[in-house]
Image (tube, rainbow, N blue to C red; front, side, top):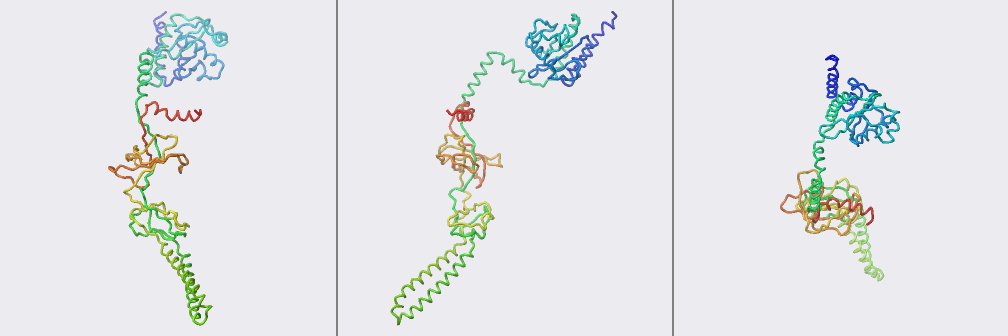
Length: 444
């Protein structure tokens, strides 16, 4: 054999190693392994397996991509799983040592002599393998060449896998019993660390002891003299009721008074000569007084149609257009006059997140639209039972007063309030909601 003939396999081996390094995907590498390895040694069939995920046949000689549902691929899968599970070293496959289900159909799918080549990845166990099959036995020289090529294929396949450095470093540590004990002790210690119970609740800043402006009588609101959140002083006109009906009643009352007075005058003149008319004089006088009272009452109502503020503050209501033209009844609340320097917090703690909160505990308001702001408050009262909120869930109403050493939020500010309760182990804080849900579901 001449020198070029002796060096030809080595040149082919180097070329295949280069082709493996140039492969851009695991599928491209699999195609090279099962098809182009034929340049180095002769074989009839080849298949490549990877243990990634649940394991799969990555490539077979011939088609560019294997069909997972094909009977040949379905038969190869248990064969590869057995070889990987038993950590079979490189060499010819001993058919007699295979499982019965695989051994029984061997002749239907593969030739008599198959060479198994694990694809190592550095110092880690092989996560893939290459199977080459033909009708003649494999020589030691061929097995040596293919062993070197398998090492290159394994290195290239490992380089194409996604990197998980922290997982790779953690796995050897977890195999040590002492490390597992320390981790378990650390987890137990952390789970027993005390943490303060807390819950989030919807919250709103409301005025403290505001002046409620009510409708002075039945009627229809005619106009508003102020805007929402407008500062007002004592005596500032707020809104007025429609006076059409009252003016008509006042005119009717005046006519009735005039009529009663005229009847009384006529009765007084006739009483000089007629005793019977003198007896009716008292009734006529009473009727005059009755109609006068009705006139005064109607005039008083007409004077009350314009509502004025009794104190200084800001007008708290949504929109004047919501009220203009609306019929109101006596005593119906129309708006509030509040002092912006006197506010409090109302929070709604969901019944599912209920904590043992009592007056004197603290909570923190995180207003919407201001992620860098927060306001501390002190709980003043907690409702004894849950009630339905505007959003439709059951919650406990909490009232709290703001600390005086901080700026006060504006009236109407919405946000989330973090309510703080007592202290409990971390494991209880983490499992409180799941345990509550499981308990409700199981009924214990």
